[in-house]
Length: 390
Image (cartoon, rainbow, N blue to C red; front, side):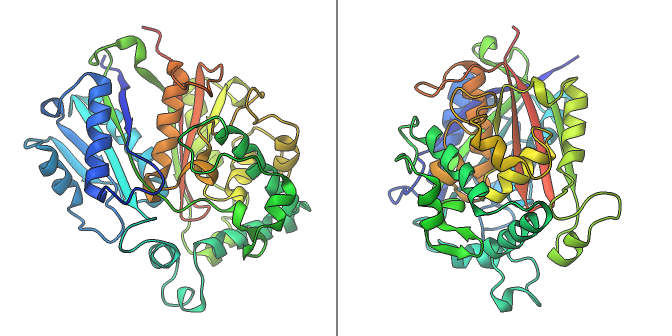
C-alpha cells in the first residue's frame, strides 16, 4: 500500500519583500521545496494552490507553466481562504495514495505588504462576509473577529488580558526566530496599550500584513532523497459550518455556535485516524490570525476547558519548553501573515520541528498538530504529523 508523506518544504523571503514579485516568491518557494525533497520539476505531476487575491482563477495553470510542468494528472485551486492548504494536504494525500499522482506540489504566495493591492482595504473586500448587508457598514475582517471575541467574553467572563497572554507567548517564540518580523519581547500591558483596531481587539491581538510564499511536496514514502526526513500523516480532519455571521452565531442546535466551533469535528476525525488524543501532542502550530482565534482553537481542540485558554497560556504551557509549545516560528502574530498562504508556514514549521531542523528554536517533538482556519470561525482543517520511522 502506498503511504503519502511530506517529502520537502520551502519558504521564500518572508515579511516585506519589495524586490520580488508574487510569482517570483511562489516559484522560489516551490523550487526550494523540490530541492529539499531531492526532486525536480519534471518529477511533479500534481499541483494545488490558492490563487493570489484578485488573480485569475486559472492561476494554478500559470504557475505550472512558469515552472515548466507541462503534463499533470491533477492541477487545481483550493478556494477556501486560510483553510485552503490544510484541505490541499488531505486532497494531495488521497491523490498520491490512490495512484493518481506521484509527486504533488502545494504552493502559494501573496504580496500583502508591498503589492499594488496591499493592506487592510484589499483584505476587507476579500474577506467581508456579506457584501450586500455587512461590508457597506464597515464590516471588515478584524471586526468579525472582534464580534467573536465579544461573544467569547460574554460566554465565559474572560477579558482582554486573557487574549493578551497569547500575544505575549507568541512573541517569546518569535524572539528565537531570526527571520521573524517582530522579535522584541512584549508584555500584557504592551498589548492592552496598543491601539484598538476593533473593540476589544488591539493591534497586538492582530496578525501581521506580509509578503511571502511557502510550498511543500507530497510524495509516496521513500521517494525523497532522504526517507528519514520524510514526515508522516497520522491524521487529517476537516469541518465547515455556516459562512455569514448571523447564521454562524445562531448555531446548529446541537452544541455548535460561534465559540463552540466545528473544529471539534475536524479534530475528532484527525485524532481518531491517528489513534491519539490531545495529551499525546508534543507541539502545535495553530493558525493565529488573531489572539481570539487561538483561544477558541486551544479549547475546541481539547487542550484546555471552555473559557480557560487565557489561564492555560498564562501558566506557561505554550511557551518555549512548555508542555505544549505553540508556534515556535512566531506565528502570524509575530512572524508573518502572507495572506491565505500563512497557514502553510504552520506546516513548514511543524515539519522542521519534527525533523529536528528548527535551529535556535528546536522543541522536543515527535507528534505535531497544525491547523488552518478561514471564514472567521467556520472553516477548519486539522493535520497531525509524525516524525519518520524510516
